[in-house]
Length: 245
Length: 368
Image 1 (cartoon, one colour):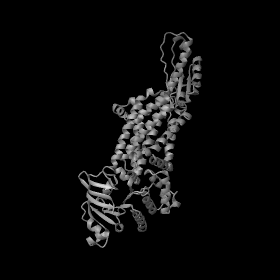
Image 2 (cartoon, chains in turn blue, green; image 1 turned 90 degrees about the vertical axis):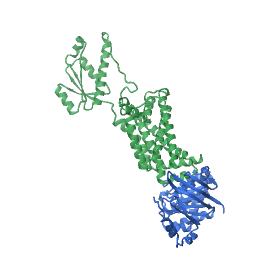
Image 3 (tube, chains in turn cyan, yellow; image 1 turned 120 degrees about the vertical axis):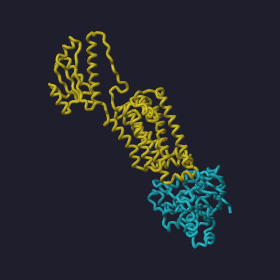
C-alpha cells in the first residue's frame, strides 16, 4: 500500500512543555485513520504539524510525499481540512461558499463551475444552492463543509472533530460520506471524541500525554486489551493520563 | 490572481449583506459632518444687538446702520437707559449692546477722540469674545473711512486679516477634523472586526491550511474598507461643499492621494488590533477607546496642540490623524501644493509602512 503520511519521532515542544513526543506512524492511501485522545493529549498539535500550520521541534514527517519543514506550500495544495468549529460563511449562500473555497485553491473559473454543480447534485442540494448557509440545518452544514474541504480534490483530508454536536443519525450519514471519499482513494485523518466513530476507522491511534499509547485496528486493540468495545479500550489507556487541560 | 479575486468578491458580499454595519459605515460620516457643521458651529450670524444711544447724532446713526447692514448683526432693539439695557440682557434678548455716549460728534471734532462702549453677554465666553471682536472690527472700519476724509496726524493702525477663513466660520476647522476622525474610526474598527470575525467563526484556520498566502488574506480583507472609505471621503467632501459652503481650494487629486495614504495607515492599525484581539467585541472596544480619544484630543482640531503640556505634545506626534489634519487643512483650506505637506506625507508614509510590516509579522507569528 502506498504511504501518504509518515512521521518519525515527530516532536513539538512549547518551552518546557512537550505537547507531542516522538510520534512515529504511517498512514496509507485511502485509509481512514482515527486519531483519538483526551483533551490536551496533543491531537491538535500533531494535526497542525502535519497540516503545515506548526513547525515541529524535532523528528521527521512527510505528508503526501512532501516534507513538513520545507515544503508546506506543496502540502497545503494536497490536503483538505475541516475543523471542529464550524467553517462555512453563514452570510454567503451554499453555492457562494463552494465557489469561494474552490477559488482560493486556485481552480479555474470553468473548474469552479463544474465542481459546484457536481457537488450540489452529489449532496442533493441543488434546490438550496441560492439559500444562505445560516438557513440550513446543522447536519446539512456539516456535510456541506466536508464536501467543500474536498472541492480541490486533495489526496488527504484532515477532519478535526467533524461531528461535534450532531445527532447519531446525521453522524451515520456523515460517515457514509467519509467512506465514499476513502473508497475513491482519499486518505482520511480524523480526530474524534465519539467511540462509536472510532469503530468505523480502519486503524486508530490513541494519544495519552503527548505520546501514542496504542496504534492498531479497532478489532486488534479490543483483543489485545481484552475489552468489549472501543470505549473500554480508550478508558483503560486514558485513565493513566497525568495531565489534563 | 484568480484566488485573490475570489476572496475580494467574498469580502464585498460580507460587507454588503450586513445592512446594519453598512448603514453605520455611511451614516456615521453624514451625521457627524452635519452635527459638527451645523450644531457645533462657533460662527456667528444675525447676532442680536441692542443700542443705547445717548448721542443721537450723525456718527452714532451712521455706525448703527453700518452694524445693522453687516450680515453678522441685527439691531433688534433700542433702549433708553442702563436699567432697560440690563433688562434686555436678562431676558436674553441681547447678545451684545452698543452704548454711544453723549456728545460723540463734538468729542470727535474737538478732542479727536471718543469712546463707544460694547457690552457683551459673556455667559458664553467664546462667542462673547468673537462677537465683540467682529463688532470692534466694524467700528474700526468706520474709523478708517473717516480718517481718509479728514487729514489726520501720523498714525499707525493695525489691520487684522483672517486668512483662509476670513469669516471665522466653524466648518473650515471642523471638516478636516471630522474627515480625520471618521476615517480613522471607520477604518480601524472595521478592519479589526472583520479579521477577528474569521477567527471567531473558525474559518481563519481553513484559510491558513489553504495555499492562500496570509498577505493575500490581509489585502483581500482591507480592500472593501479601502474602497468604502474613499467613497465616504467623497460623501464628506460633497456635503461640505454643498451644505457647509466650503470650497476645496487645492488639488483634489492630491487630497485624495493623501487621504488614501491615511486610510491605509488606519487600516493597518485595525490589522494590528486584530492580531491581539480574540473576540469581535474586544476588537471593537480597543478600536473605539484606543482610537477615539487620541484622535479627538491629540489631532488639534478640538484643542490646539501648541497649548498642550510637553508630554502630550510629544504623544501627539505618534497620532497619524494629527499629520493628516495638517495635510487636509493645507490642501483644502489654504490651497497649498505638495511642497507644503511633503513632510507630513513622509511621516504618514513611514507610519504606514511600519504599521503594515509590524502587523503582517504579528499576523504570521500567531499562526506558527
